[in-house]
Image (cartoon, rainbow, N blue to C red; front, side):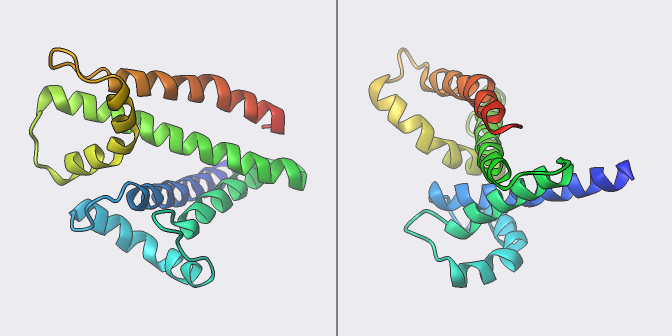
Amino acid sequence: MSALIFLASLAFYLVALFAAVRFLLQAADVDSRNPVTQNVIRITNPVLSPMRTLLPSKGRVDMASLLLVWLTEVGQIALFAEQPALGPLLLGGLVQALALFANLYFFSLIIVVVMSFVAPVSAHPAAALLRELTEPLLAPVRRVLPPVGGLDFSVLVVLFALMILRNGLIPRLGAFVGL
């Protein structure tokens, strides 16, 4: 039975992950000709295309992807909860979705930093995608804290903020809703 629960949990996680990436791709206005972007779109289209007829995008905000992330997180919580109450279940889905987005950005930034040391001018599609994906977080910080002597401290500021979110705020929100 635990193997089935593990597989179901993995399936929920992968659906939420791909839907979250799809949401971020549209929100960051990532190049749609990138092969990685095209694969994410191809994978998520069977589920998101019907949802988009009912819930269209609002500018760069892909409402269908966001709804799918939330619904899969709610489903994953319901899978493990004994007798979930509706309120904590729905709010828990929001908390888990927030945690997923924070983790996606955190690990994307870590990979971008490592790539900047290993292959600073890499033209690999995944490298370009991650740079484009993280730029909307880094650009506002760069306007306030410009690079000094060739060193970009905006990544450290954003990583620190994400660490506070991941290790401080999200666990407290989770405890508040009963996760």
